[in-house]
Length: 81
Image 1 (cartoon, helix red, strand yellow):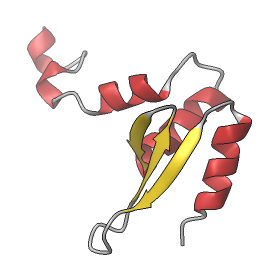
Image 2 (cartoon, one colour):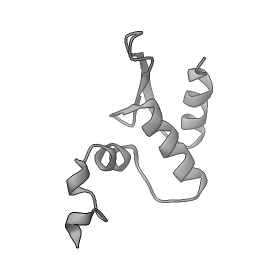
Image 3 (cartoon, one colour):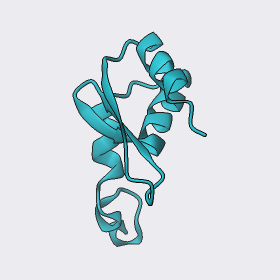
Image 4 (cartoon, one colour):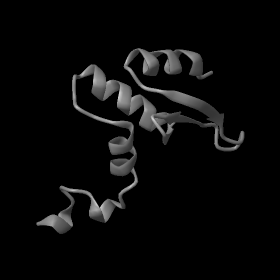
């Protein structure tokens, strides 16, 4: 069971505006969070909190943008060499 209330509480403690939490249909077994106007998956939301705990400069939008780049467009891929 995912404790979405705890995740929302942590996001707000980190200074984010959480507009809503969406439960994705049962077959997906996921949640999505609307954070600072950006829709994040559960794993993206966790990544945002973890990176902020490590004192990195990061935003909800930067997490969403980085996670949604096709693998061949991500820095450090074999195509970059």
